[in-house]
Image (cartoon, rainbow, N blue to C red; front, side, top):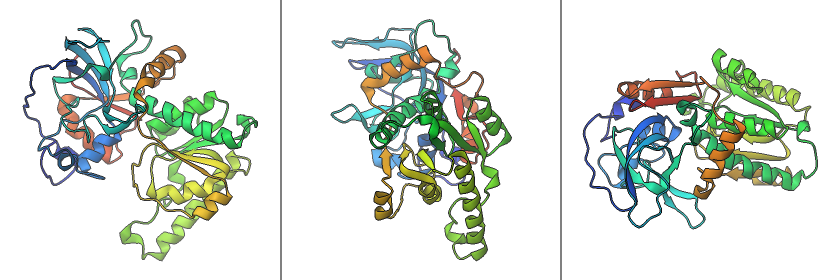
Length: 377
């Protein structure tokens, strides 16, 4: 990605050669195999909520911070390297860590001097490379979706733990966990289902409705509520638009009441943000938790603090996960099969990455797990 641009997200990408210095101590030369197209790439191309080039003070940024790489060479130096030449590894997207192991800046996003996976070769700190399990039962495309699952793991553990501080003994089967949609929400609802909750999620296409149903999640067809989002700035003076929204919200809340026996949502996974935030809060049960680890459609939120206090609502906000937890999450995925269902991904070749960028931004991808192939396996 380089310089200002006009047009769609794909137009912000420029294919070119770039150079980087020799391997320093503790670095590995890698060959990216598969990359996962994440919301942070879309945000970077849109230059919102930040312009990562300006933030990093760099004219050119190589994006792509989640995917599978092949290790070509390791300069371990004095460090105890956990990877060897030839290993297939997951890239952990940690640029700058805080003292507890959480990310302050994301690799190949707002962390300066980090080189992402949208390149035929790259180099990175060996501490960010987590080997794919030997003899794994799962395909490389399934593993390439790990970022959504690792993020969901961390967010779910925090949200569920908070919910249990107020609802200590009741059976989860009496409670509904709901998600607005997306790969992270899907992974999180699969954990909620394992924990015994009722689970439901919105979907906006026949393909996604069928996918949710096949995986034991009650699909709620988003197309039934066409005016659910907040009116845009241009629509704010349109009284008919506001009435259509009221109709959509009432219809949606009626569905939530039916699914929850009239109690509302116990844990609401909302990674959308501003356009639907008021609906999220209205759908939430007493002692409910609204949990988020993303802000796909808006970061600025407002609510009535008194109403939230009286309803004993807990708001959980997480970002990425804790670096030392990564091996344990990977091992849980391998042992329990909590991983993207086989064949649920869609893969774009490297030459089609600009097309992928535009398709993702315009909602033309049916899969929750869009990937791009950089080099052959």
